[in-house]
Image (cartoon, rainbow, N blue to C red):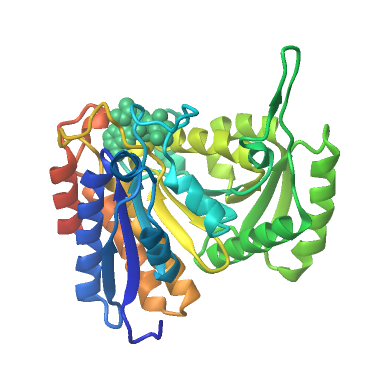
Length: 359
Ligand code: ATP
């Protein structure tokens, strides 16, 4: 798109609370659009997920995939329902399929403690938590998905890391640390691995050392994943940006979400060279769907991440500033609201209203 055109956003609300958290986030985007010169959106909604599979036998139609391919960004609610499964008993997960279709290798999982949100870590509100975990999303142990070999006596799954994807992932992560530095953050990238045990991670360390001179202003360090898990609990404020293999990231990103108050507050992005999907970390939450209890904050913060990515990709600083305005509005809203998931009385409508008012 050219800077004067509208950003075309493919909107896949999905299933369960995906339908409840998507409209408030779109309302927030409409509000920043109205107050940001040069920023325009065109939303096209399409079905995807378990309900779609039940109706058509496919998690996503070809038309939906085409829409995603042509759009400037993909905005996804949550997909899958425990009661709807493929014949092999696995859940319907178009969000994972999209990662492979569009080669979305960088799973970006920010952990930022909103003032007023409960963290289980003592001192977190005073010291603040604000780091980004980047999870490789297309290979690692997940390369073995569906290919594991299980016999009566043995089970094998194989971890695969390739030079091409590792280089792209490290360049992406170094660049993200560099962008954070420009915004007054530390600008340090930590490589998290298990290089003391596996050759594959030692080899990745060599690639890390090859790539980092291209970003001389970014500080780097390396940490074993077990030590990293302990550090995340003891001193989460010491991290800035970290990058890791898929399975390590799968586990530690849930820990990161737990540090900053839980799933209702955790946004995410899966980013490739051309395409990107923005979605909350949470699932479809069948236990609360249809009750007005879903917290839309993670979806709203995912919208902010989408704006920030579009700003960088299309060199439109106003979109990046709009993203920061959304984050600040969320912070302000949390001065007065207490979501139901934290034992408060505020559900989807009240939280949305407070964020919109703060904007
Ligand atoms: P998936 O496997 O699809 O990622 P999950 O097993 O992680 O899903 P979720 O659907 O994310 O499960 O729900 C986990 C718990 O968190 C549930 O009790 C759910 O109600 C709660 N939860 C998730 N998202 C939200 C939200 N946005 N607001 C309030 N509670 C939420």
